[in-house]
Image 1 (cartoon, rainbow, N blue to C red):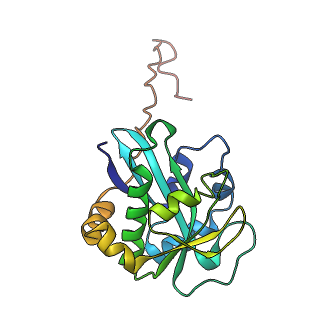
Image 2: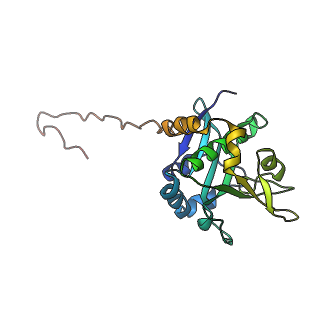
Length: 202
């Protein structure tokens, strides 16, 4: 499908679509991770939009600033995938792969070495994407678990797999999430009186 990449800022989080489980809710409630991501990479994620509709996005945090839960000892220079959402009506069209591709471009531009994720073998969510899907995009298991293995994408290896990421990063930084249309307040015309003149506006 035809879709355009855009970079996501911390100020955009409240405008992103949410899944039924609201995995994004806890992330917007404590946005310190997003500020840390912007400090490190200028943005906290990337997305895809088709027309006016957002069809997918991914969010990352520095591994030492992972929101919620226990924070494991990070690998030097690692990023953590904290959310990966794809519009249910557009699944199976390569959207998730393109989001991972865009995140790789963003991270490589800042010389980040790897992207980590906690996956799910049986019940994937936006916060814990499918183990099989991540394996298909180049992730490998670094800490096995019966249901939620920790995975890693070595970003140097994504260059031959994903092509020219520098060109993609140029497109991402050129694209931004468009602002919602401005709401113009209605103009109220007050009647005049020859005795009292024009009443002051409230």
